[in-house]
Image (cartoon, rainbow, N blue to C red; front, side, top):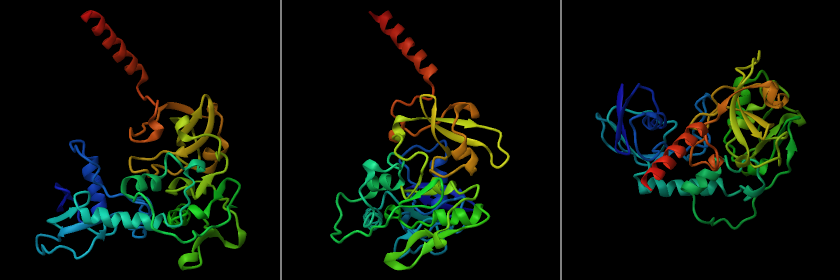
Length: 330
């Protein structure tokens, strides 16, 4: 076991734990109260092996290496790839240097990214959008022409908008690790690198829709949901069904009783809890196909939480109780 201190909060974690994982453990502790000290991530995904180390948004400052060697590390390190050592001290939000360096990282991620949030289906649940607001700069210093690509259909259900891609490699690793065959990947090198399919192949395997859920931006979108509604106008509900291919546990996005889309459930870090099959995701769009469990928990800082009440019955009781108390005072 190793003791590590992150932004003044100490935790004891198993050997081999990364700084990022330790920071998340602190935030998940029920006794922890304070700002989210876990570094942001764009490429790291705990369910995908070898993920992380590409985007550098999770950089932190190690001010003390360990008890045995207390020297600080000479430059910021990627917290998703750096293991903790006993006695290590780390700064994330408390380091002005880290926050300034992260602004530069975000600026690089946004160099070629189009400002089309008003028409992007990912708006309202976009990790890059959140990262830009939380850690980005007010304006870019980049004056050159942005690179652009043609939109292509990489299957009957998935639209690829490469202009929005930040090359996080999540979709490639997902196809590598949870499907039988991978027919897409990163083509070319350097500034002309792009995600595409091999010789115009299409993605048709049973779990291909999961690349939509892992994409942190609007590069991979659901063709059955495109331009139907903004996510904050929908009502997310937890639901399940008996499925022989996957767990059958999903999130339904409803407008009235109409199922606009089906997605995998995500945890507090925006990562998929259970992979779901294409049959559940794309073919079961009737509300009677599902057993509704109740409203999905939405974090209050999300725009999707507007007018979304999980405990509506309890809320009504609380309002009635307050009204009675006010009446008694008059």
